[in-house]
Length: 379
Image (cartoon, rainbow, N blue to C red):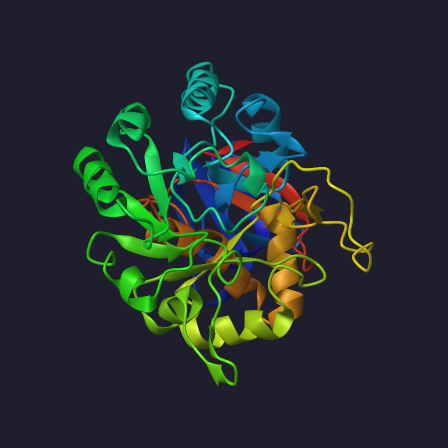
């Protein structure tokens, strides 16, 4: 038995100051005001020193950590994420991988899981292969620009049918419906995401009944809204904002380059606090920093000057979002843990409750992670 004492416990929508959390093996046994929680004799004590104790972060979309691809070094990247409070992660696999590279990446990560080197793995975020060839970084490395062919993708679908949680699509691509049907047949509970797309709102909405619930890095790598020279049109972003079912991922870097702070506030206001998900979307790319972006140290660029993901960790993204939107630390935990767990239907994760998995982090008021607890054990 363990007891976290002197904690400011972060609940779904309020705080419990001077709180205690009891942990029995891998689960939360009891929590509440310290005066109401009896600590068993002999329990291991973890003193939170008045800091915030919330649910472990869940990063549903990141390719890398510590500037290393997750699929190349799952052990190190997993450890790095634990240091930053990420107790659950979906490694993202991008369309710069050909079929064999996709399969090898999956094998490397699953082997690390089998060896006990990647405990915070929750499943795969398939950011491809069939996205718009006109959007995203490293477009010259996209090997899936040609016609969609079942014989080219079905082996990948079979490979991840037990582990893929999210699959990104560009709804406007010719032949995408057959691909969606095959994925849905193999993975009935898959969550689809609209990504790197110039689809119309109607094309996006077509796939909501199929399980399209996420907008991949909302307002990044999406279609033009130009209609006539002086008339504003609509695109993927408006479809996402309009449809309540869709969760909006946001990359909140320090300078607000991916999503300007005003847009972050606007998206939060439109979507509501139940439909915003913070992601890190860390990527490995060492293209030159364009003129005027020298201080953007937490984002990456490709050789053409296109933004190529971030250098963020999710804890930092949470703090940035607090700065850019004025949200509370309770809200930040919602965007970094509760909402990701909800969209993926992850039982017992994303919030503090009796019986839930004891994935917890201790953070200060600037969301610096002081301690990570995974399934009841200090990492």
